[in-house]
Amino acid sequence: CGRAPEATALASCASCLGFCSLGCHAAGPAGALGAFACLSGCGAGISVLHRRTKRGLTQWISSCNDSAWHRMSIPVTPLVERRDPTSGSVSPLWVVALGSETEPHPAVPQGVVFDWPEPVLQHREVAELARDYILWEWLQPCRPLNWLHPVFWILHLFERQLRRFADGAFGGREVPVIVPIELPAGMYQGIQTWLPDTRIMLILWLRFTDARYVTRVQVALVDGMLDQIINVVKSQCIPKDLREADPRLAEFVEPINLKFDVVLRWV
Image (tube, rainbow, N blue to C red; front, side, top):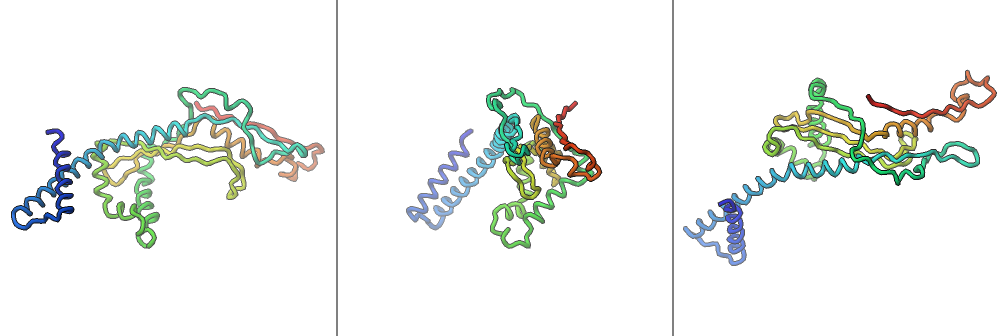
């Protein structure tokens, strides 16, 4: 009995293939009985697919989160400044420190997490703003090109049904979804700054009991990521000679070369 829906769906598919290939669309009671069998089998197949999709949705999200977590929690690779041998100035490009690739990775990566709990999001109406932006800005109906995207029709026509489906699949509980944000090392012309390899985890906690889907937001970075970004940007913002930055320092005869490193310690 446990496999009855699958057997019914298989029989329905076989009967449909028979009707289509042989043209056996009989009229009268026989045709009605065949049509009823096909419809019942299709209904059973849809019911089975619905239950399996619910069970597999949690596993799929967990698998995606696990993959993103391992990829984004790789320890920061140490960098050293590459200086011009002729002028001694710092190049906009940094290079990997020697021996850094052979260092073992820790079993449990350390990092920093910025947390915005549910009361803060409710006060700022973040969930409502995010939903309105997706539906009425990103997928707004007045853009004809959006009509060609299936996500537009799915969210605008079946949002309530999808919400009920997800709420049933997760049992009304909060579900974390990790959104990996990866920026490769390179020169970014918009800010005229060279940035190192940057990995940020945006963690959205979702609940589908109502239209306020986002209940909590977290931003996580592996330990040392902020230190490296600050030090790389600092070396490009501070001039080699501070007398160039402030005319009040022009009376100094020798160049003023300010050197320091930023090291963050979280308590």
